[in-house]
Image (cartoon, rainbow, N blue to C red; front, side):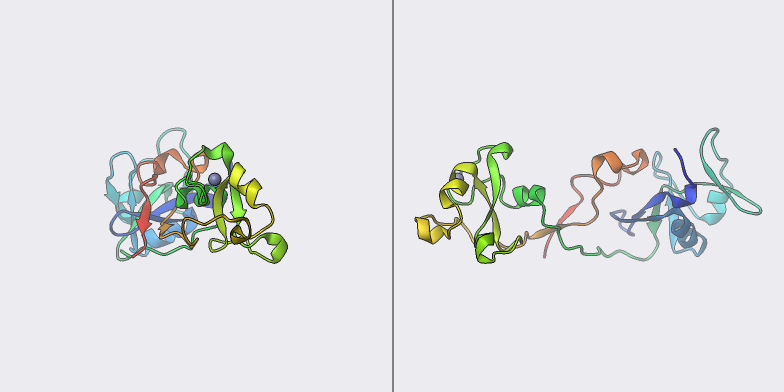
Length: 197
Ligand SMILES: [Zn+2]
C-alpha cells in the first residue's frame, strides 16, 4: 500500500446499508466528525461514531491518520445517518452493458451464439449518420451483421426483434472487481443493481 491514506477512498453506504458511492478518506472523516455518518467495521459490521472510532487501537502494520492529538484507523466503509435514497446514474453505453441489455441475443435472428460471435450493430449505419447510442445500437451475430452491412435492415429484408432503447436498470454503484478493496466486498456485489421504476 503506497501514498497518503487520506488519498484512499472510503465506501459510502446509505442508511439502508446499500453501497451508493465512494469518497476520499478525508471527506469520510469529515462526515464522521460532523455526525453525518458512522464508520462500519467491515469484518464485524460494528458501527462507531467519531468518539469510539478514535479510541480504537491502530492494528500493527496498518496505515493510520495522525492528527495533533490522535492516531486514527482509516475508515474503509461508512454508513450515512440520514440519506436513504439511491442516487441515479445514467448507464454508460458499453459493449458489456449492451450484451446485458440484449441478453446475449442477436436482435435479428434471435440466436445466442456466445460473446465472441456477437457484434455491435448500428441500426442506422454510421455511414448514414447513425449514432453510437442505446437507441441506435443492438447486438447482432457476425452472420447477421455481415448480411446487413452498411444498409438499413428493411433494405435487406431483415427485421429487428425489438426497438432498441436504454436499459430499464441502472447501476447504483459499481466497482470493477480488481479495483475493489477487500473490505468493500461484503457491501458491493453483482446484486447491487436496481430496476428502474
Ligand atoms: Zn443473427
